[in-house]
Structure formats: structure tokens, C-alpha cells
Length: 243
Image (cartoon, rainbow, N blue to C red; front, side, top):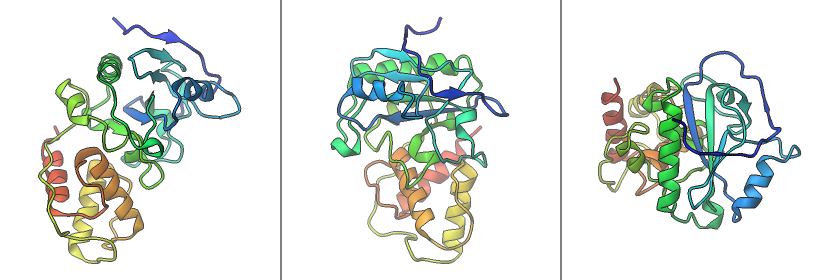
């Protein structure tokens, strides 16, 4: 049975183009008022939307039918796909985000997100590794839902892919400006997992942004874009845990 949701249709959607629905993408609103955020997502002027909206207290609103292409991901990339909107279902989670000091997500809200995600995953063949943050598919451009989002809690409930992160350490295996085999190996591992990064052997701005995005999701205690041993080994453990 589907979870209880209220209908609040947004006009901002279109036809999906090619391929299955195989990504579940989570966002925060990044605005201080949930009602204003919701109003923006249904305003035709905004040209943005999502399939679902989750309030702080756990109320869930449906904005766009799952079979339609909501406009939530923007310029993005994962696993070689670039039209993420056509392949994904998007959930907006009411939270001030980084502009508002990144407040914690209330328990009632997270429980509602988990229930909604499990409901969606029961209808669509979305692999755990493709339950993603907006920041995963748009590194450097987007930060949501941020490093305080409880991905481990979702994974414990059967939502998403997770491996316990290794404790962060001082120093980096490689960092901005470095070149060589270690950098190329890191880039290859990130690309293997799905991140949009080229294997150049140069630790450029794109690589730093992707590493920060990885940390924001999987190694949240320190997000600095520097590939320390904790970051690299956590990435290796995630890859080894894949089916």
C-alpha cells in the first residue's frame, strides 16, 4: 500500500526521455519557510519541481506523477547518464540547508522520508547505490541534502547503499594540484561508483568537487575535498560491498 500523501500538483513537468526510472534523488529546499518552498515548486515561473515534498513534521505532498519528468536535478551526471530528470524520482525535504546553518532534520521528517523512499523502491527497480544526493550528481554546483543528512539511518531501514566510514585522518593521499597514479586511481574508483569525473591523473577542481560530494554523503565528519586515507578506503569498501 502506498504511503498517505496529499496532492498539490505542479505544472512544472514533461515527458521522460528514454531509459527506466532507476535513480531516487534527495534534496533539501534550502529556504527558511517550507510553505514558501512548496509554493515555489508549483509556480510556473520557477521552472522547478519535484515528485514529492516532505515537511518537517512528516507531512508528504505529491507534486508530480512518478511517470512524468519533474524538473529537480538540473545539469547533472551519474554513471554516464546526463538527463537525470528522465531517470529519477525527486524528493524535496524541507530544511534551511547550508544558507540557514544546516539545521538537523527532525525525526518525524526522516521517518516520513524513509517510509516514502521504501514505498517508491517497492514500485521501481532502483538499486541501493542509486539512492543519491543532489550533490552526488551535481558536485560543486549543489550541496544538498548536506553532510548532516542521516544516510546511515536510511541504510539501516533498507534505503540506499552504505559502508561505515573509516575515521578521518590528518594528511591526504592526494589533494588539489597533485598529479600521478594515485590521483588516476582515485578518479577511476569514483567513476566506477558512478561519479562524473574523468580519469586524467590530475587533481583538478572537478576532482576536488567530486571528492567533497563523496564525503558529504559517505564520510560526513570532514568535508574538505582532500582524499585522505579514510575517504579512499571508505570508497573502496563501498565498491567491494556492491552486488
